[in-house]
Length: 254
Image (cartoon, rainbow, N blue to C red; front, side, top):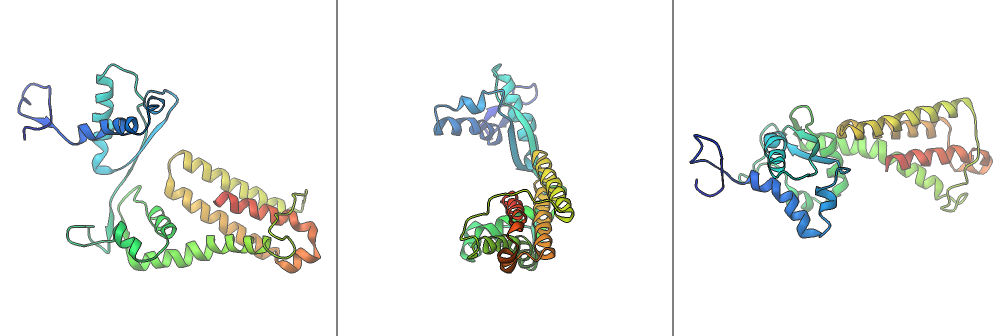
């Protein structure tokens, strides 16, 4: 191969680097094509560069790209965190678009399944520490038994409660409400929220999503154990603070 960037090392006179050497520099050039303020992103010491890539591209982003930046002698925004993934397999085999094996963006759209369902499954099965597998059975099960039954149920219950005739779509004003079970629940919810934030800061996306489901599960148990329904809103309005807390937990899930 003759086209490419020559390798400046003895014994490599006939070798060139192509594609990935140019591709990484393309991160900068495409930003510059988008805005004349590109240096706010690429020459700013306050910017933390997080990159999300497959494991087979680690060397290009951790060695070649930083090396090309250093070689210019200029101050560039350099890699702060590299989040890599292993492989996602399909029904026990490899994805192959050329052979029609797997499900891809165009075919996913044609299924009519909402994009958020796809996002949830792919994030919950993100191969962060090893290969994971896509199967249609697990896709259906995750949607029905986790996303809808847990998270969706919690969001729906809180919204229906707030939408009742007792509140008329207005979240009740927060009032101080202290009762041992409620205070314990609130402390546990805050701990889960803090855990979620720590996991996001550490770019542990799969773990963070699991914590979101723990938080919504915690909210469902709270609603159920306190019998928070429309009759309670009518008969014990003082417990509106408890409803407010549940809504805050939902917002933490958003």
